[in-house]
Image (cartoon, rainbow, N blue to C red; front, side, top):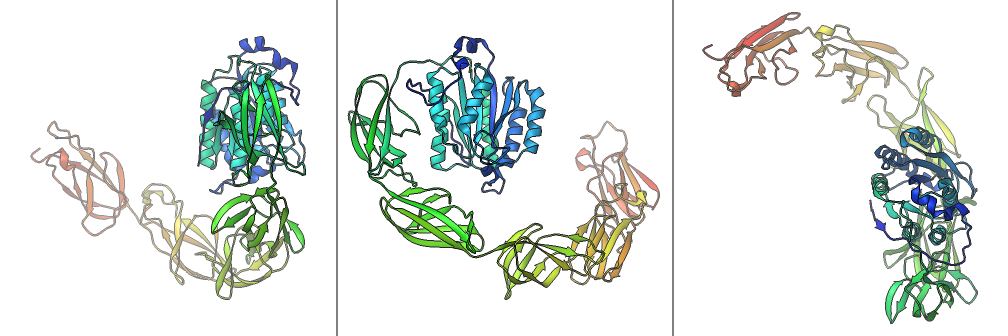
Length: 633
């Protein structure tokens, strides 16, 4: 888990905006007096199906984390909930105010119900959702909690929107929790928080998700969002970087004044470069590569005079460009992330759907769409040229194995596929992936093992039914409560295979399919003392096995009244004189304990004084009472 927190003042920039703000956002007098609110904007785009390294799906971790954050509260402020990407794929206006602002105890049930019902579906319209969120506030102040696992996918720039908000005195901070982002995505999402005066945090695991939302909730709870934001005329440099073919690039590099760096540089679409005032500045910039480096940066002088934007075009050299496609059996395949390696080290990674910028050179590209495909391509990337990687996958199909019992019932469980004496795949109680072929199927289960059943996997979505021999055992305990140590029927027993050895816990009253053969049943040792019935069962046969507890007697130990105890005697010990097993540990005065019939020595608490031990005999079905005393009393 990595957590990074930044809290910055809001940067204000005056200039021409490409996004229109509602007129009511200008009404700062109302915002100064109206109570501050909190709006949660929650990403339900399709990528939230993805998983963290711990295996937890991002959307599931988000449900847990947001539920906990709601339980913690937001300082008594009214809360609203907006979801996006939750209704239909491909819709850049799929953003819905699910719950309007209200007291947390009032709106929480609606939000929790929504979390339980919706599932990741569509695109990531962050900018549109923020614009709609501004309308939700109706000109009032507040905080937005934006949860997203990716950057804008709808051809808009939310960071630019934040600068427009600042220029228009919008009194709303946006706090961002970035879910499993890479470095480039993190930079873009952190810009939203920084430009609005909010907080940015990473969530790279389920625990990290929970921690990040808790920290944002604490920040929101303590932040005073009712103070109007200070506005003033600022100077900024906007940079358009392009190559000789007028292809535009996102840049990296530096802004310099008097040969000293004053800030990092960014390009139009990713932010403005705010400077302190008029002057002669230098920019040293180039295309930002996938590995985070800047490609062949060029230097250019920029004269800033008037307030607002000073625009500059920069001609840069074009790096290499690489994309990837995956095919299986001639058909397109979604593939996986691709990693680029040089000299045994990973240089950068990119998603199959992305174009990655890279320095020219020879690379080894690796991709692992599934366990059957560890794919490697060696390619030379050339400057200002497109390279398309074509990965051909070994064909796999999805299949599921279910087991058919003699009584016609079916069930599923985990197992293994073997070929030529070696394990090839693990299978699960759901659809799994494998290459078509003939395998020996095994399932290592104590009661009903499967050994070397031949299965043939042919086609996608195939359900393979494996008939297996089985008998059926039902374990029952005799209803003699007085002979159980806890005076209630046991909830588990041990079913022991006399042919294979070992045992497995089983639930009384449940029908247990077992491999034909010999079995014994043992009661759980803490529940009492039991007989050990043995049975032999054939294929298709059903047998009820009754487990009977041995008769027990009761024993109650107390202490005689005395003012001479060194400590209050609150315990004692029992020792079997005839070799019987005893259930439980120390004796407590006045508590009834169950014992097998026989002779016992009862000893007192040694720290209480010289207490005389007593020998007693416990009789089945009877209660024996023992009173311990100090010696001489």
